[in-house]
Structure formats: structure tokens, C-alpha cells
Image 1: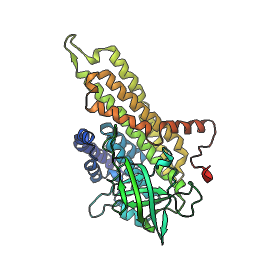
Image 2 (image 1 turned 120 degrees about the horizontal axis):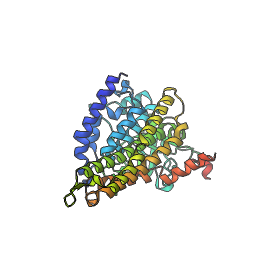
Image 3 (image 1 turned 45 degrees about the vertical axis):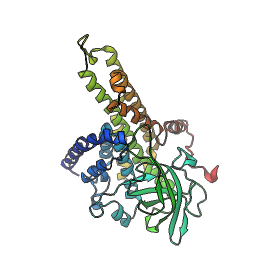
Image 4 (image 1 turned 30 degrees about the horizontal axis):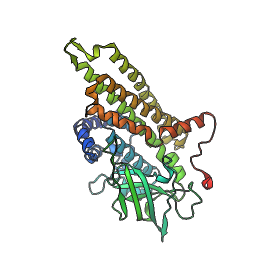
Length: 394
């Protein structure tokens, strides 16, 4: 691809962010409005198909470009950033494991409409272990009947299709999971409400699948191939994208706080907030941490691209990507906290800084939650297996 094409695409991305995403951010948060208008604008600019080959009307870019886009969107609105990451992840999973027919029907625009996808994976029974399912589909001839209760699905009730995982008849245990592309218009799908502290526009509510019929042609990959899809299709894009959004939140909170303290003046002393050493020290602590994220993200994205081009398993980066997600989400919280500290009552009032503070907290709990993730990292450090899937329920 030419550098010219990428430069033009990023210029269009920045325009969409400034003219659409920023304009809607406060309203969407206050009223819990799903950012469909933002995603539609990103789709028209091609960015919802960033990793998709040109054959299917995609940009044909790489993980470097995707992670940079997620970072830039996250700087201005975490809700839009998360919906974007879940969509790109779902589309890329379909791109990696789908048939030509599936790609034509789900990745290419249909009658001028750009389809929005997402993951629908986690179940209440396994909590934050979103990759581990107890639900099981039944058969209807060659087709499937899905019955499942998913606890958190970003874009619940708003997406055009869900990449859903469950077991199929004959599965030995929770290791044998299968993936399906589920049309959101299929009867039997009931999304639940989303009312949360932060990221209030991303609608990560529960979904119930009650006798939802899925044709065989919309099974994604082979039956019981789910472990491979989780490791090599879902996790890499999801983790680099999540980390990039939280890096964006960290940067956005910091930049907003800096702009305020440079312009806010105490008339009694005729000093700006920026003239106080204590304020500068607090900002500096956050900035040092924020600057650690960008080079790490770009290095990980470049390694993902190398594996992708070599058609090699991307799961070898699972721990490194998990470390990045943990660090980025914790730095987002540190930065948002520092932003409220240096801006005082102004930052605490409803507005951009207060929104950054609420949104940032979501990163700590998003799967894998930082508690679970640190256990993975610790096990890998001492040579213990991750044991994400327990054979025979043990």
C-alpha cells in the first residue's frame, strides 16, 4: 500500500473524529446513546474495515494502523473506541476463519449499508473467564439452535451481527467450543439494559439467545475449533485494540487537564495553575507513564503484523499483549486521577474530565480483568501453564 493512501486515510479519520465523534461525545455519555452515528462515519471513511482486504471493500491496512486508529478515537471518546475495537476484532476473526461466502455477506457493505459486528462471548457462569462457556447449541438438521445467556456484549441490541461462541452437541467439555455468526435480526435474541458508571454509550449489556436458529453456513470455522480461534483470532486484535483505547484515554485526560491549567488564572495572585510547582509535578508523574505506552504499542503491533504476514500463530504474543492491556488501563486511571487533582473542582464537575475519570475505570475490569491478567503474567513468568481451559471440567 502507498504511504499516500495511508496519509489520506488518517486525514479522513482525524476529520471524522473532530467533526463527529467529539461533537457527540458528551451527549452520548449523558443520555447513554449508542454511537452509531460515529461508527457510520468511520465506516464511510473505511476505518471499520481497516484490516479487511480490498477484495471485500476493506482498506487492507495492518495492526499498526488499526491500533493507531483505536488510540486516536479513544483520546476523544472511550465508548466509540470500544465499540470500534469490538467491531474490528469481530470482522478480523471473520476475515481469518470465514469462508468466501461469509466474507461477501458480512464484511462487504450490503445494499449500501455498512454492517456493524461485535463479540458476544462471556457468560455469567464463568464470569471474567469469557473464553470458557457452559452453554450448548443443539442441532436442527444441518443447522444449529443456540440457547445461551451472555453477560456482557458490547453493542448489545445495536450490532448487525454477533460473533458468538458456545459448545455444540458431542463436545467433550468446555474446551470444545464453536463459533457462529449470528444475524441480529434473527428471532429469539433479547438484549438487556446497559446502565453503568462509565463508557455509557457502548451498551455492553447482557443478551439472551432463546432458540436462535443459525444456519450451518454461518458456523465460523470447524466445530470445536474455538480454542484456536480464541487464541489466534479473537485475543490478539482485541488486546492490542483495548490497550490502544486506554492509551488514548490516558492521553486525552492529560491533554485536557494541561489545556485547563495553562488557561486558568488565580486573580488574587495573578498566577496560572500551571505556575504552581505542585501542579506541574502531578502532571509530570502521569506524563512519564503515558509516554511508555506508544512505543510499546507500536512494537507489539509490528510483531503482530510480522506473524500475520508469515501466517504464524499470533498466540505467542498473548502474554505481551495482556501486559500492555493491563499497563495501559492502569495508566489511564492514573492520568484521569491526576487530571482531576490538578483541576480541582472544575474537573470534578460534569464534563470531559469527569467523563474520562469514569470511563477509565472500565479498563480495570474489562476481560481479562487486571486481576486475572496479572495471574496469567505471573504464571508465565515462573513457567506455569495458563490453564485457560480445564479438561473434563477439572
